[in-house]
Each structure stands twice: as structure tokens, then as C-alpha cells.
Amino acid sequence: MESITVAVRIRPPKFSEMVGSDKQRLVTSKKDSDLVEVKRATTSLTGCKRTTKDKFKFDYVYEGNTPQTQIYEDLGKVIVENAVCGVNCCLFAYGQTSSGKTHTMLGQDLFSTIETCKNKYDALKPLIFDCFKPLFFILPYDVIYSIYEMTGMDISNHGIVPRVVKELFSAIRKYHYYSVTCSFVEIYNEKITNLLEKKGSKKKYGTLYGGMYTIHNWEEARELVTIGLSNRATRATVMNDVSSRSHAVFTINVKFQPDTSSASSISATINLVDLAGSEQTGKIATSLEERKEGTSINKSLLHLGRVINKLADLSERVSKMTDKKDIEETIKSYHIPYRDSVLTSMLQGTLGGTAKTIMIATASPTEKNCPETLSTLRYASRAKIIKSSSSKNKEEGIDDKLRSLIDEAITQRYNTRKLKTYLLNRNRGDKYYVKNMVDYKDAKSLDAGKMMKITVFVETQSSMFGNEQVSKVIKRVVNDVSSLKPMSLDYEKATTKVLQLKCLNV
Ligand SMILES: Nc1ncnc2c1ncn2[C@@H]1O[C@H](COP(=O)(O)OP(=O)(O)OP(=O)(O)O)[C@@H](O)[C@H]1O
Image (cartoon, rainbow, N blue to C red; front, side):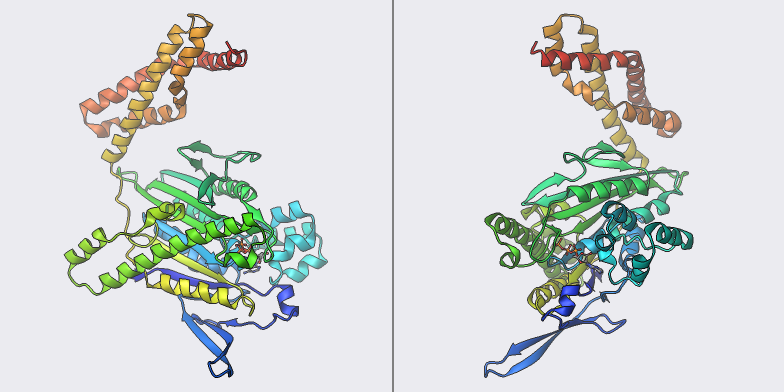
């Protein structure tokens, strides 16, 4: 059993923090050290003023100038490596508002930012501490762009999410069969919203099935992330001009067949989470609505904390046991309250246990934020106790795959038949036409693409089945679908006509 990985990233001080009265930096980490030290002024019971030092030890501690590439190399790469071995993963960023969570998880697509901002200062604000900064203020964009293209340097400033997806595709591209689906949702006031489907977003890539978008390459994923980010609930607060007021969860399901000669496939789920700010409500809320929002954020972070505490408690108990049976039984009977909040229900299966879990605690370096920083570091220390033993998801054998295809085929066949009946009866008058169409609205869910996939799968792999009954079912479905093909054009026309009739209130 290993502890979950916990890293701390201290954001560089902002300009205002360097020149104002708040300039004293209290969070320090010695170079190449895994220690964070928080110095704070306290007053003893006798009234003496003194400086207290709180020390915390983590797996990684990053200071302000650590580049995004380094964070990815240490924390993101592990996620990809585990996922391609079939291990579920979760990486989440926790910290107060404006401490750098979104910067770490999503970062900025520098060139598209320059395109949209058309303002050097705004576009380059996030790069203020980058060593490339002087160049941007002297040279025009296109010259800079060409220099970076020529040198192949990665200055995209992308965060962990786009880098993980990019590397994931490079890792699985070599396999004969693979599928990647993703979703990007936000949890705001305990409600889940699909960030890829909100009004105004132009869905250019991917096909939606069961709430997940199928993506074929990293450019498609990048497009989806951009759409999602533009739909996210943000608001200017006293501490951050574009504060994220929701938890954003980017989920990737990956499935691939590593070996063409074997029929089994490997699958894994990755949850990448940018949590909403963990500060006390009073610190940034100025209106009733903001207070309500802050309370909801705090509540769900509290539930996450509870789950973390329970997982840590379970790990402590289990570490004292030696008998394998006792350990198994304790784990089985121990209740972890995942269902108490939307966030923890979503993360169940990728937090602790057999999953690879990584937490990045982000912190501000200034004195003013000292109480919040201490609270973040304490939360992170608690998470450090959680033990997990990453293990692979069960490989899906040919039987499982076949079973799910048959279930799918049977549903499709049912819909096909309904559609067929409808098409044959459609000449019986307009009223019947509409009623019938409503009755048979399920038929609309007939997915030609999916039937095609099943047919190809059956045709190419039928020799493997060796099961007469199974072959029969699949053959019947294939026949049904092909008999429907000539009618499908009519079906399109029929749908349009029904819509027209409905508008006329027939
Ligand atoms: N490591 C860093 N290097 C350079 N700039 C950073 C870094 N971390 C954060 N920033 C900048 O600080 C500002 C606030 O960061 P960010 O929006 O990521 O905070 P946050 O924790 O997500 O805040 P909120 O919870 O309010 O959304 C942004 O302008 C961001 O670009």
C-alpha cells in the first residue's frame, strides 16, 4: 500500500502583493525540498509577540517559477502511465480562491489567448514570471510565434488536463482498437451542468453518447476544453477577476485492445478536478447570492474532506492489521459517505482504494492569506495519510464484450421493429401519423452508426464466437437492419413531416 501523492504549488506573488503592505512572503520552501514552512506572527498568553513556524512535508513542493511542463512531468505523466495499465485515476486541485488551481489544471492556450485578447498585457499576464516575458514586450506576436514554432519549445502554458489528453492519445495510438470518451461538467450549488452543451457553445467535434463525447484526437479534446471553459460559472470576486465558482470535473474513459491476438481489452477512468475556492465564505462574499454560493462550495468541500478523513481513518486501521481476511472484511464493512454530495459520488471509484489518487494543494505566498494557506496545508496533510494500492480494472474478455454487444443489438432490434411498423402504417391519415410517431418515438434512438459497428464486429470476429445461439441473434439483427436501409430515407422525411404537422397543431 502506498500513500496518495500530495503536492503543493505556491503561486508567484502578484504585482500588487509585491508592492503593497502585504509583501512579506510567509510560505517558503527550500529549493529541491519537500518541506513547506509557514511563518506567522503570534501573541503568547503573556502578551509576547513571536514568530511561529508550521512545517509540512509533502511529496513535491513547487515554488512560483516552476513551469507547467515540470508539474506535468511529475504528476500528470503518472496519470497517463497508470491509465494505460488499466488503473483508475483522480487528480484534483484544492486551495483558496486565486491560488492557482485553474492555472495548474487547465492553464492557458497561449496563442488562442493572444488571438482573442489582442492585448499584450492581458494575454501575457499569466506568464508574468516566465523567463520569456521580456521577448513579448519587444517583439510582435507573429515573430514570437515563429520563433517558438522553429525551436519547438513548449510555451503553450497548458495545464495538466490538455497535457494528459495529448499524452494519452500518443500512448494508445499504436493500438489496433481504442476508444476515448470524455465529459466536462461543473458542479454548481450541488447541480451538475454539462459544460459542453450549454447554450451558445458550438459543438464542433465528437459525438455524444450517454453523456460522454467520443473524441478521436487531442485537438478535439482541446476544442471541448475550450468550449467547457467558456461555459464555466465564473465571477469577479475581491480576490480574483475570473474566479471559478464551481467544481469542474473533466472525465476521460479510455478503452483499448493492447494485443490483436487476444480478445480482451483494457479500460480506465480518469477524473481531473479543478475545485472551487476553499476560503471561508465571509472572506469574498458581498451579497446574499454569493454567500449562498460560498456555503454550497464549502459544504461540498466539507463532504470531500469527510470522505478523505474516512479513507485516511480506514488506512490507519488497516495498517495495524496483519491478517488478509481481516483487512478485506474491514474494507468491505467500512462505510465511506461518497453519496453525501454530488462531487464525492462522481469521484467514487477514483479516490483512494484501488485507484491512483493525486492531490495538488495550491497556496498563495502572502501573509494576508496565511490562515487559508494553513487550512489548505492541514487538509493536504490529512489526505497524505490515505493509503491506496492501485490495481488494474478487470480486463474485459470477449465474453463481456460480446454480452454487452448482444444487449445493445437486442435493444436496437426492438427499436428497428417499432420503426418498421410505423413506416408500414404511416399512410393511415395525418392524426394517426402524429400519434404513431409519438408512440414510436423510441425508434428515433436507432443508432445507425452503432449498428454498423456491431455488424462489422460480428462479421470480422464471428469465427471466435463458436456459439450458435449468439450467432443467430446477431444475424437476425443484421438482417433487420439491412431490410430497414431502403426505408431510412423515408424515415427522415417522415420526421420532418411530423414536425411540420405538430407546428400546425394537427
Ligand atoms: N504558478 C503560476 N504562475 C503564474 N501565474 C499564476 C500561477 N498560479 C496562478 N497564477 C495566476 O494567478 C491568477 C489566479 O489563478 P487561478 O485563476 O488559477 O486561481 P484559482 O485558484 O483557480 O482561483 P478561483 O478558485 O477563484 O477560480 C491567474 O491570473 C493565474 O494566471
